[in-house]
Amino acid sequence: MTTIRPGTTADRPYRADEVFFTAVGYYIAARRAYENVSVGPHTHQSLPNPCAMNASFSSELFIKSLLLLQSPTPARGHDLRKLYDRLPADDHKAAAALYSRYPGYSVDGDVDKTHDYFEVMRYYFEHIMTSTGFDPNAALRLADSLYRLAAAKHRKPVVYTEWGSGRDGPIRST
Picture 1 (tube, rainbow, N blue to C red):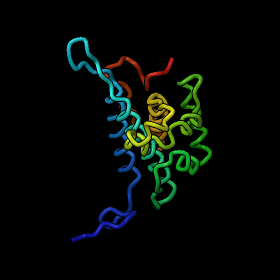
Picture 2: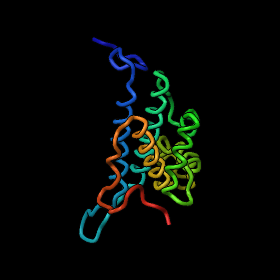
Picture 3: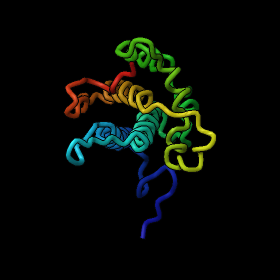
Picture 4: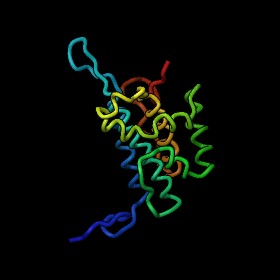
């Protein structure tokens, strides 16, 4: 029986592209959770908490996949601010350029706003009394931009952008 040690998968290093494709799966789950789906006559439903949690986890994994392109040592932790700050300056610049799709918003602002969403949204009931609210749009904007950045760095096409809404990218707040 093979024991899997931290930092390896069956005695081989993590591969950046495997982390990237795992992130894409959580990104897709976030996008689908955000869509208003008909659940009955005159009734539509979206799932903002699962959307925010999956979008934040996908952002975390996109960042970790980018970091693995630079170093074989996997990054640890869930704090998006700490992980994002480890990216090189050219990645920060590219992410900021991608945010031009979202006038009035910034990548740094959304990183700060969503830095702990993965943990908070998983245990939202524990934070309900102290929460000042959350913004699934911020989580989706960040995930979408990091997806595009990571896809470019991994030389993969950006193929998951619309889910029946007729819009490209996350829904913009008005």
